[in-house]
Length: 457
Image 1 (tube, one colour):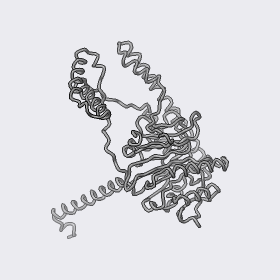
Image 2: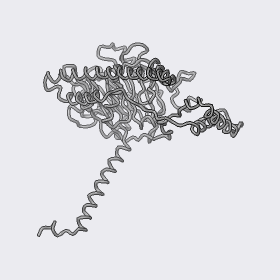
Image 3: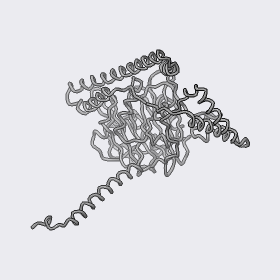
Image 4: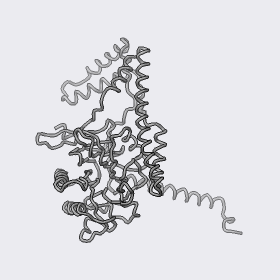
């Protein structure tokens, strides 16, 4: 008779209970690990200006866990942030070249203090974190074809931004440095780890001098990885690979870094790959009002009866307001009175956010991502990957055109049935140009005010 046969039902139940507890413990441990982990990344996307590219980037990053990603060569003009607040950029005034940006996760948006779009090569962003506040800088260095004067101006701008950063802040600098630091860390042990990649060039020497001067450490070289987890940029012919997309952190915080590697599986039709760096720094969540997915149907106020009820409620609420309070409190109470009256009088309609990126486009993106992994196997695969990139771009453009056509048809139908309010609202949506939102101002000294308290002062 075997040992298994001697087990009673109670023994089996006890063993199963232990297995379940172990499984739950491992799951909770994993959740706790990611809860206390900050993930910062860098990616040269080689333009977000093409139709649908930002939406495709958002869809691609759903496959990864991140808090903030620094983006190079976004090719957007001007400075600002999207209405959703998840993308902040700084570009040239008129030309669609260079440009840097930051893509934020939901958690990153909630902990955001402020940002400073300095130039088309440098942007800084500040978060509420623990044990200290966190400043993330993203840079896009001049290419090898640029002059030495441009390189010095580039580093001078970074140094100036570092001097403006609060001394207690944790500083992380990400970006496409266009510099090869190589695998030999002799005499540079305090700046570079033992696990670099390739050979060093003159621009790499300049980067190491800059890092040593400002007590920064290159996280990419800290951990032993496979070669394809080190390099992040491949030449157009896929013959040469370089480690030029780097994440730097202050040396006193380098022990908090748990991993830093390249993800070749990430695909956005770029010669560069995504680099992510994990550290034991925790973003501190702020108390933010939940996002409203419903909006009052103000068209109901056209009814004289409904409008009369609304006005009565507003007047009654306004009479209860203390006139001795300051201007800010008085404005807040007036706003609250109007919202409460509106909420009690009219019904709400749900806001439907529909992307014009079609399911067919997303399926083609998945196919393109799989083809990227085998594009170097043969010339035929490489050509297939290029064709898929072109198809995705074409389908995204078609999706935008179809979305516009649907809105035009919807407007025409609205005019036919007499729903002029909705029709002209759609016309306004189609006619108006995108105006970026920007939530920072400069004081009289020219210093950028990022926090809400500084802006109020």
